[in-house]
Length: 294
Ligand code: R5P
Image (cartoon, rainbow, N blue to C red):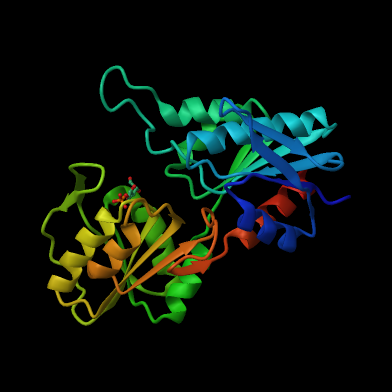
C-alpha cells in the first residue's frame, strides 16, 4: 500500500515533519496566504494521492478554519480517503453547558472537523467522550507512555493529578514508571487562578511529577507546586501533553516552584524553553494499526 501524503497545517509544521519521518510519508508543500480582507487562502502544491493525512492542531479559530480549508483542498485534489490528525484539539474543555445558554463547544467543533474527512486521530483529548462527536470514526492516541519514559529517566518517584478528573492519566503514568500516585483537589476561580484544598500528601523528600493533559496559564501547576513544596517535596516537575503556555506561563512555572517542565510536540512551533518529547511515534503507530484494519 502506498504511504499517505501528509498535508501540514501551519499550526503543526514540526509535528507533521516528525510524523513524515516516522511514517515515511511524503510531506506536501502548502501555499498559504491572506486575502486583503484577512481571509485565509491555501493551495496544495503537488499531487495528493489516494490517502491524505491533514495534520493540524487547533489552538485558535484561525487554525481551525485552515484545517477545514486543507481538508477540502485534499478532496478537491482527488484524495479518496482523508484522515485528519489533530495533535491538539482546541475547544475540547467546554464539554458541557456549564451555564444556561452556553454551547457544547467540543461537540460543535468536532462535528465541523468530522464533516470534512473520513476519520480522525487526536492526541490526549481533554476527555475521551470528544471522540463520539465527530460523526466519523475517531481514535485517541495517548502520549502518556512517552511522557512516563522521560519522567522515569529523571528519577520521578511520585505522580500527582491536579484533580480527580485527571487521575486516570496520572495513574497510567505512575504504573509505567513504577511510582506512587495521588490527586489534588482543584477548584478554578478564574482563567489564570485556581485554589487547591489542603490535603496531606506523602511527598516528603519525593521527586514528584504533576501530570495533566495541558498547561495553559500555568496556574494549576504553580498552585500544586506550592502545596507540594510546603509538604517537603524534593522536586516538582510539571508534565503535560499539550504545552499551550499562554501569556507568561513558562517563566511563571519556573519562578513558581516548578523545577522542570515537560510537554510533547503537539503544539510545538519552534524552539521551546522546556523539555519536549515527541508524540509522533505514537500517532504513527495508531495510523499503521488503522491501515491494517481498513
Ligand atoms: C483543565 O481542566 C485542564 O485539564 C488543565 O488542568 C487546565 O486547563 C490547565 O490550565 P492552567 O494552566 O491555566 O491552570
